[in-house]
Length: 122
Length: 102
Length: 146
Image 1 (cartoon, rainbow over the protein chains, first blue to last red):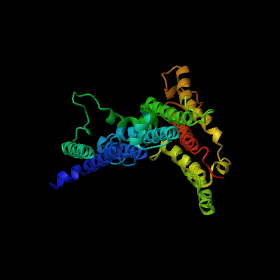
Image 2: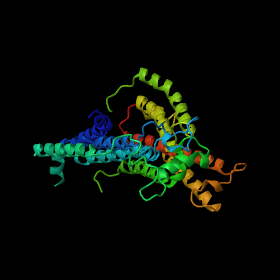
Image 3: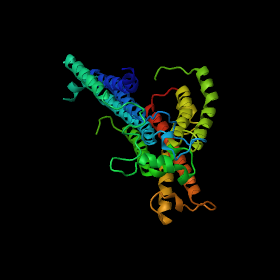
Image 4: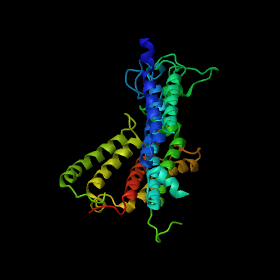
């Protein structure tokens, strides 16, 4: 039972983060709060990918003296770390575009609340 | 209506927790992810990157070699995405000469 | 951001701290071959060193450090550095982004790949730094004090 808990607790925390992000996106009425929920969701996905890439008894994928590269079980898998590296910076740039769109919506309609905005569009 | 959304989020969270309990143990050396050869007997790219990175590029950091040498076209695509996001922000927030939007 | 008053203590702290963060950003870019780091992380740190002064003191004073109309040309130069390396390799006879055909005198084989990765990391750092500064500058245009 303890083995099962130690092998899976990281995944459970990541799923709770995803649920908190979805709560923010669905239940809040303000558009800025929805965008913050989107950012939390993104952090959860990145954390899940990085936490999967672990190997017991292995070290970070940087070649060290004394640990030969011909033994593959000495180093962690390098591919998920690489893909998530660029995903973080792309996420920041995409949030910038989302906030620029929100500024334009506020300048045109005067409100950032979801109910008032739907009334004003129609 | 609000309680329906809360119920939906609760069902989503429980479904994800149930699915996460089915994944293999984290960090197990004989995972499906940490295997040395694939199911059909061919070589796996993760192991090739670890064992051949220093011979190919004389660089100790394997992540930089993968990002800059083996998968350099993906990195070019990411750089173009970042540049495009900057340009979109610049184009959206200019001052209009007249007041109504078109 | 309309009713703020400039605070001299925050301005003094950021003016003292900003060059050291920039040196650390360059260190992270250039040591991307030997320790965790590289182009994306170093570019973000360089952007932090410029954004601190902009947040503390407004755009008019921070333009003395990095002018705001220079951000867009530098971002384009960063993309051109990356793309240009690939085109030079294509002209010299290899495939696109084949670092072993670059015309750098005095290096052979795997050492050419080392220098090719370093050149593109510099291009990536430049683009990331200027895009983050560009996003901030466009959002606070017209609502700045000082």
